[in-house]
Length: 266
Image 1 (cartoon, rainbow, N blue to C red):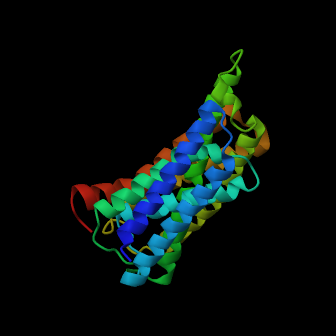
Image 2: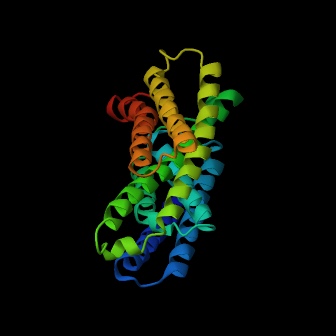
Image 3: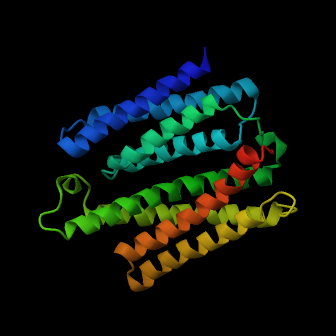
């Protein structure tokens, strides 16, 4: 089977789910069942594509676009799992098109393979915990953006129609801190394994990644401590979350973008 056709089918279902979400969001056309079915189909096919590539090559490809595609699939899956208990499918308006774009870039710009077999088991734990942490905190950052807009609009009388389609403010905030808590746990594992098992940070161009990740860890930790001890919420939570995620974005993809795409190094 042509794997590119497999990927194109996933892209179409992602975009179809996004289209239904936009209609639901702006025109209050309740099509949640179709949205969820298409989204689950898209994620399933996306992971099937990733699995098929793995079976063909006998390893995962951790190059720039392939890693971005894997993370987007994982973010989409985590969103759908969260939606089982909280009505947060509206975040798919941003997440699903991004997953389609990342998958499209992966098949348009095939990168040189970087195999997980190149690393020992300690580094494999580091890589996977990093990917999961980034995925969870990615959703948290999007949640924070929606929370900021929602809180601002609710102060207006009356608020705009699309704000009324979002889940309750308390639900949005609860999911935000849940994602940050679990994401911080995986980020802690990533940092610990990286510090313990990476031999030469300078040779592997990982100094800035480590420093930025540690600063991000401190920001998210401070936010959770502030939440538990001082009841931080609202705009304070939004600012901390966005700041921490931007640092992680620079840490995780900054060096890969420069080394693999701009400088064409592996």
